[in-house]
Image (cartoon, rainbow, N blue to C red; front, side):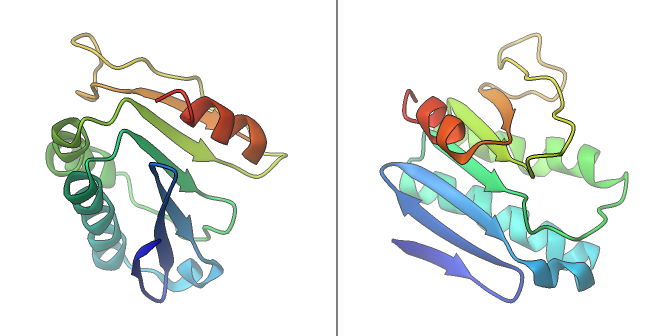
Length: 132
């Protein structure tokens, strides 16, 4: 079920997973539009009581600034925690270097109370999210 869309993204909920599909139009995205997209996504997680989130970065072309991460920790992560998210996945291009996974909890530097993993396989990503 589609829950939000605009020039830069489409967001859907399927089998309890809130999917955030970035579009190739993100090549022209500015930081205000990027922040707004993250706010919409986190709000949809809260509104729908989402436990599993997937951000599909395969078509993302933007260049977020370094100042995004502190803002995300302050404004966005608490909403995911409020929603009860337990698993958060990023789907990357097959040749992308995957960052290490993180485990949510009190010792998590970003304040995430959920596990985060990065995948280059859609099948592996969805199988992991199904356990949320």
